[in-house]
Image (cartoon, rainbow, N blue to C red; front, side, top):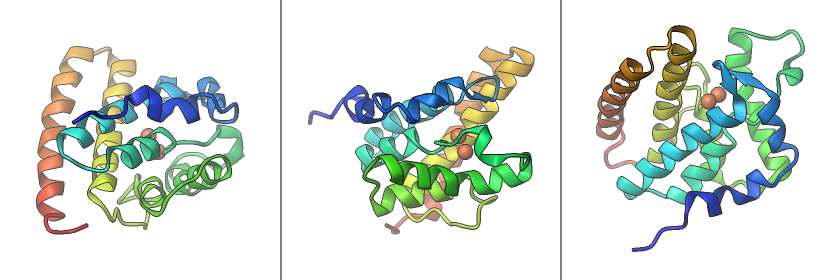
Length: 172
Ligand SMILES: [Fe+2]
Ligand SMILES: [Fe+2]
């Protein structure tokens, strides 16, 4: 079976000027654009391996953090963690055609911090990969333990994904 390339799925976003503003936003010690693409490349890879809807999974992963710090004014910290998925979804809907699965993936990616539950395996995949990637990026930036965190994050990732798939087995 042949799959669409990551680049062909990402093309629409990577040629959108508003989305490309994320290249100037700092996020876990790198740019928000780089973080988003790091998460999306892993989601793309795992979604294909797990025979999921890899196109929607990748599209939602690319725009899951589609927000700028200026959109929060002084509301940083925990509030930003809770609110930013809704802002990302509004921004994504303003620029792209977002289907229901993609919308839930974006809204629920901070679960359990957000009140919106992931409703699909693709949404569980995104919330798991995003957390592990955030830990990896932050630890790499803070402590430069790149190799150690790489191995640790992948080991944890396998465990969390296994747990998610057991929980959602038989679901959507
Ligand atoms: Fe996020
Ligand atoms: Fe993220």
